[in-house]
Image 1 (cartoon, helix red, strand yellow):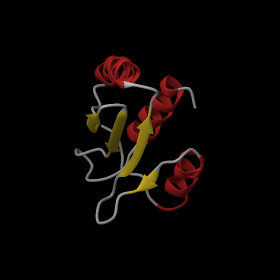
Image 2 (cartoon, rainbow, N blue to C red; image 1 turned 90 degrees about the horizontal axis):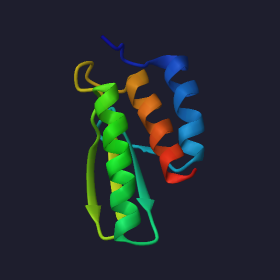
Image 3 (tube, rainbow, N blue to C red; image 1 turned 120 degrees about the vertical axis):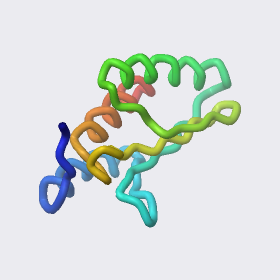
Image 4 (tube, rainbow, N blue to C red; image 1 turned 60 degrees about the vertical axis):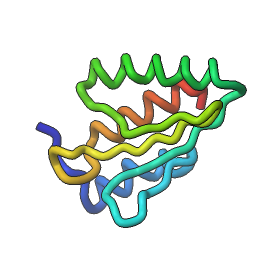
Length: 99
């Protein structure tokens, strides 16, 4: 089972993600990012690839899609906040988006 990130480990894990556009969700122990793609097909393709990664990790995002915009929120419900699973999935999603 993953462990909740706290203190220095949390700050060090989040710093590179914040540099790429992730931010903390107000009132929750979660992170969020909005991806904007060229069009709906590109956004949907990203979501499809990310869904396959998430399923292999058994760690699923909260997300929504409107046309070419995908909004993602990550948290680990089993630990009540952010864990290494969120950090790894965020990194994989950024790679899929070309960041």
